[in-house]
Image (cartoon, rainbow, N blue to C red; front, side):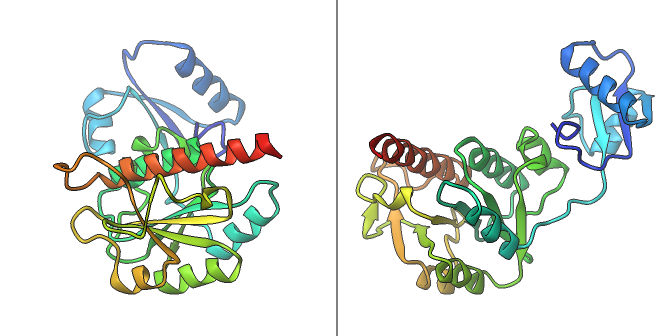
Length: 239
C-alpha cells in the first residue's frame, strides 16, 4: 500500500527465506521500477528494525510521517461531492487504536483523522501496521489546540458529535450522519476533555448491553462510521 501510494521510501527490506507470493513479487517489481534499493536481511535484523517480531518478512524504510494541516483537510473535503466526515481523537495514547481508527475512517469513506500534538498516540510504525496500509492514503493532522480545531470545523458548517455515555442522542436516534460531520472520540478511561466536550454540538452514546461499561475507541469509531456511511447511502438512493 505504501508503494502504491508513492510514499517516499528509501529502501525495501526482505527477510531471507520469506515465501514469495503475489504481494511480495509486486512490491519487488515496483521497487525495481523506481530504482529503490532492495536489501535481504536476516530475521533477527528485521526484528530489531521493527522493534518486535510482528512483521511478515518484508519492510519499507520511510521518512518520518508528514502530518496534514487541518485547514487543508477542510478545503479538500469541500472540493468533493460528498459531505465531509472526520474523526477527532482526544486522549488516545495507544498507537494501535490510532491505526485501527485510520483503517475504519478509510473503509467507511471518511476524509481524515485529527489528533492532538501532545499526550496522544502518533503515526508510528505500530500505527502504520495496524492501519493495514491505509495510513499511506488517509491524511492525519496533528493540532496543538483541539478546542480551536473543533470550532474551526463548526465555522465551516460541520456538526461536531462527541461520543460519551448518557448523551442526548444515541446512534439509533441521531440522523445527522449524512451531513458534514466530525466525530470526537475520547479514551475509555478519561473520555473527551472537558473543553472539547463543551464545544461539541451533540453528545451521542452507542446503545449496548447494560453490563458492558464501555467500548474500545477504535470499535466505537467503527460502529459510528458504519452507521453514518449507511445514512449517506440511503440519502444518495433517495435523491
